[in-house]
Length: 278
Image (cartoon, rainbow, N blue to C red; front, side):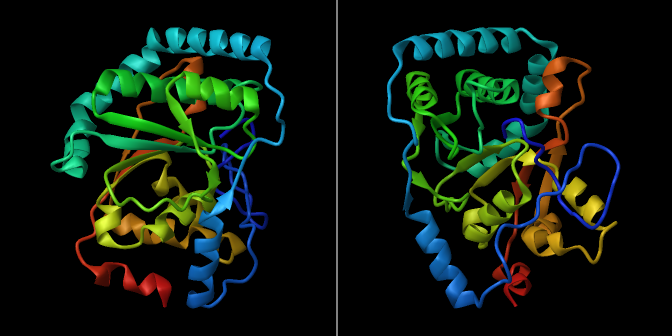
């Protein structure tokens, strides 16, 4: 999430607003069997911070910083509106996803540097407050390849688990899972959807991230764009996605979540998903 702009992407089409272009990093799509093998390999890629030196002074300063952010956003109009919208409009969907389970794990991809930038601090603060206030969030797992040792240790001190595997966004939702991904790149959402492209997995997912409706609207203006291949799962998922946009609040905190939505998926049959792999 961090400081870079992460939304819809296209170098051949200019649109207004805050949307930027991030082209897919992969080349031409491979055959399906090769693609599955590559996905499996990527999901097993070990990861550790590139720096290895512990720094207690930095850790203390960063922990105090996060505590200040959590306190500030907890008392903001943005969080009160955000929480109220969940309780009045979204909580029922959470319970449908949960089924007989009492809580769902939260997976945070692309958090960015909480030591260097403000948006990741605000986004992490919201995640921590949701866990505290909603009573349905279990373990929180976090990953971003740019995390430092200091940031990893502070995240763990806050009660999160920092992943030691770079999943490239391809966690399978074998149990109820909330994916918390505001302002991530389009490819990361597509990776997540592709890895879960079956009803049993999609029905276990709640996704908080960039608006799929906005992707569809902006891509429709660039029909010949090379970015279309990287968002095909996003566009296909629109047919069975219940999207609820967060309410706009005129304060500084909203900027860390602009154009974000809740997405709940409800495909019924495998036939709804078959064409995407053809």
